[in-house]
Image (cartoon, rainbow, N blue to C red; front, side, top):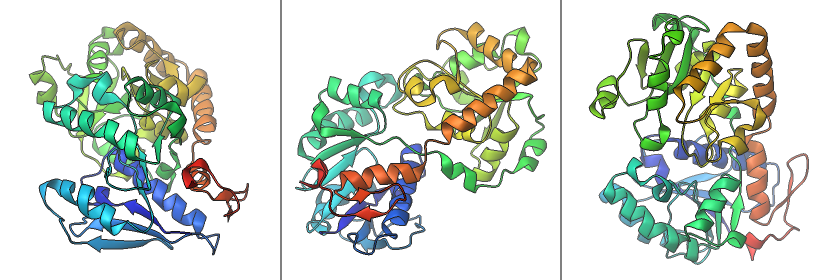
Length: 378
């Protein structure tokens, strides 16, 4: 069986949610194929400017210098990468990949550049809108992360439905991190006295509705903790009023994040659209109730294990937060429900789905067999 190459350009960039998916899915696939000695060789091809390392058992990381480091490695991805991977199947997991490869499988996580264009710069929108349909036509298969994203990719003409396969993300990677609860105390926060959310100014992330909710006197005793790159002045520059009970945690590491999640009253995700919605699942598997907007893939991914509030109704968010803060029994019920639901989203399960699409048969014990031929292996 010909080798499988993974596009490793993501190893040269700052971490994002999409890059997390690539890293975890490759690691899980590496673990899975290690149980089957006859599985094909797996190789990550990366520019010579690689900044991160991958922890792998059988998958080799190969640095390829040609066209590395030029214009964020874009020429490398579209010209050097397909040449280096010419003898095998090439898998790209971070939305983009080369169009000049005859046996490529590309994961496109969402259709946000079409659904919420205001969330992106003009150059970014034009580049993605130019490339995505080309990738959709030239890739052997397209992967995506939810049925919602599949529908939207079809809607906007990126690929036809019969050529798109869904692989849900896992969320169990957060269980590997010991929560840094001391970080919570050092930040002046009280267990159960705050709600956690992403500090993101993109339009579709809709943090404005949380800022309005926390200006309500009914949440005067609660704090909204925003983690990530965006700062108070970034929101104010966009015309939003940031109430005094909002705390900006800044960029934090995985241990600090899991510490914040473990001690929070709730995790809030008010997005008007999401291709998947990994952060609420990460919160739920750690025992933190999630409140989400019933938009995009969030209902598909969270089901009835999360509370919901309309994306344009600050009062609805106040009500759901108060329900958790004021009723310990209800909060415990939602914590248990969330844990059980999120536990079904594992990276090993995602890797088994990918293995099947690559033409490997995987049994209940996770062992691979080459006797099965999928459409992706044609």
